[in-house]
Image (cartoon, rainbow, N blue to C red; front, side, top):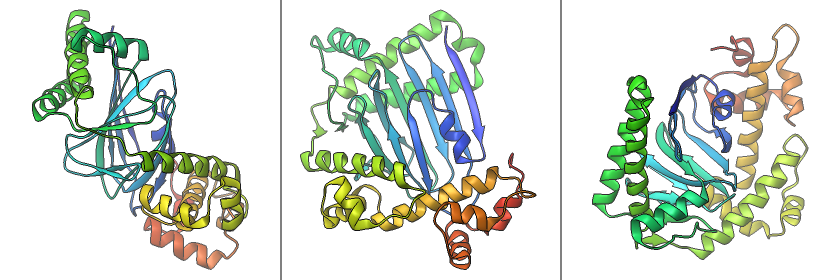
Length: 314
C-alpha cells in the first residue's frame, strides 16, 4: 500500500529532518523567514519527494549507498548541482553513496526519487533490453523532450494524488499502475544518450566532500585556512576554485555562513530567560559581538536578539 506524508516547516532543522534517507546540511544564504513544504509518496519500489523552499540556500546532500537517487529542478528557478546549472528538464542520476552540493539563488522547487539498485537494473533491462549499471560518479542527463515531458507529467500526477486524493493513491491497483508508468518513464530518461560526464567536476566533487568532512569536525573551532587546506590535501588556490564552482562563494565565506546558520539554529532553540546572544556567538567563534550582530542582520534580515526572542514554533 502507498504511504503519503505532507509536511510543512518554518525552520531548516525541521525540514532536513523530514527526509527519509538522504541527509541534508542546509546553509541559508537569503534573508527572511524560511518556509518549506515536503510531499513524500512511498510506493512499492519507488519513493517520490517534492521539495519546496522559500529562500536561497546551499545544500550539502549525503546519499545512502543502498538506494539509487535521481534529482531534478521543477519550474523556472535554476538549481546548480556540483557547479552545473541545471536547465529545465535536466536530471542528475547520482552515484551510490555520493556527497553532492546543490544551491539555489532564491525560492525553489525540486524533486527527488529513489529506488533500489536491484530494481533499477531489472527495470532497465525490461524497458531497454539491457541492464543499465548504476553510475559511480553522478551523471547529468538531458533526456529527449518527449521523455522528460512524460516523466514530469507523471511526477506531477503522483504529487497531486499524494496531496489531494490520498484515498485513491492508497488503492493498490492505482498505486501499482502509477509506479509502473513512472518506472518506465524514468528508465527512458536515464537511458538518454545525451549526458554530461565531466571528469574535472568529479575530481572537484571529491575535494568538496573532503572539505565538508573536515569542516563538520571543526565548525565550532577556530579555523586557519592554510592548515585546513593541508588537512584536505589541496593547495588553497584549488580549494578556492572548487568552492567558487560548487558553492558560489569563497571557502572563508562558506565557513562564515555555516557558522551563522549554526548560531541561528542555536538561538531559535535557546530559552531566552537562560541564554544570551553573546554566549551563543562565542560558541561559534564569533568573539566580536558587534560585528557578529551586523553580519547576522545583513545575512538573515533580523538581529540575533530578535531570533532569540522568537517562539520556537514560528
